[in-house]
Image 1 (cartoon, rainbow, N blue to C red):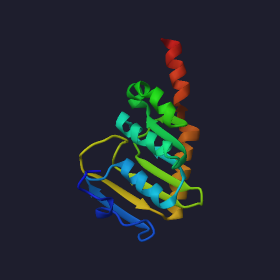
Image 2 (tube, rainbow, N blue to C red):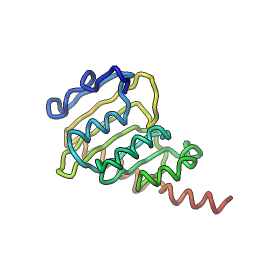
Image 3 (cartoon, rainbow, N blue to C red):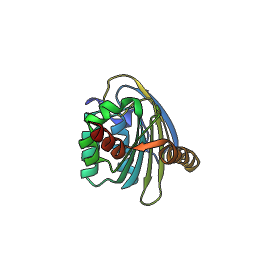
Length: 173
């Protein structure tokens, strides 16, 4: 987030507003994740994105090190495989379950240990940028359930675990 911006300038607390949206260059996906976790507590996270950057992984590393997530499930796009494989060692240190699929979605799902659910559909990849990005954030359990079922189907039926792909790449070299 820009140093001069506060997340409260862009978003209301989850308890005050079940559905909200923004268009801003002051908010990053990692900011949103930290903001959600501060409100719901320790949670499991599902994220989908076209690609991921080292800077975003560093943010996730510190979120995990702070024991604010119980597990992260990540789906990235096959077309970003070369970039993803370069970050493989770092990804496996931070994220237990990473999958590759034909994916261009940018979804963040958070389910707290006490059962709170938050859904975020955003335009931003898991990268750092200073562009205007948009997102819709909801605490509606029906929206979470629908998106979760679709992300779970993508993982279960249409993806390859990154570890399997990495092993194939090593065998080919």
